[in-house]
Image 1 (cartoon, helix red, strand yellow):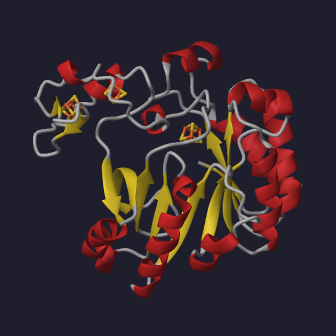
Image 2 (image 1 turned 90 degrees about the horizontal axis):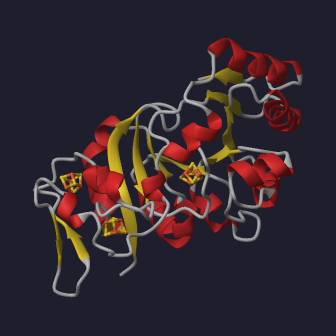
Length: 280
Ligand code: SF4
Ligand code: SF4
Ligand code: SF4
């Protein structure tokens, strides 16, 4: 039976797409964004054991096979394990079947409009998503993918046939800025931007605006705005340093992006035809 590593499921979220939604966060991401707010979602646990002794609730132990096991019933969610982990991982992962994830969705189903899958990067579990969305659609709920754009949707469009849209991060367009910020080639992301637009599956695009990075911010916003026009929302997101890694604060600064500065880029996007651009 197919299983996927689930970092967490939020039964009711109003920030992961339109309306009230259940959000399923999968573990694992091929990117290593400097400003990642959830770096513990990037890698799978390698059972090094460094976090076990840090747990004040004795919720972590080595099992008979030497793996690190997590007892959710004992866990007090203090996140000491995550702070200790040197591998950008978490011991608090559940390897779940589609039926198990669906079971949690069914409990919130009367109160939600749909389901959003996120991460990490949920498209690493493409076959799992296809099965999950097929079942969620039978409940009469919409399905959205929150993606960093690393998956080649054109080469394998099966998941698009069972989902309502993709919320796509376009973090950097200038190659040098992308290499420095993301540590992953940007070409697939930009290809997806065009492909998803043409396929009518682009729900929204998101770009984080960094303080005092005029040229880099403008290059990205121009590129996106000139392509999307009015065809989808464009979220201009203020950089906030909370929860990011220490090395990020050192190079990107300790201050969040000023609202007026971010608004400049929303205005620029609108002037280029992206009428649905707004700051969050
Ligand atoms: S794509 Fe998202 S989860 Fe992956 S490293 Fe970047 S910010 Fe973190
Ligand atoms: S978050 Fe849970 S598992 Fe991790 S250290 Fe705290 S109590 Fe232990
Ligand atoms: S979560 Fe991190 S520190 Fe804990 S065992 Fe896994 S890799 Fe090691």
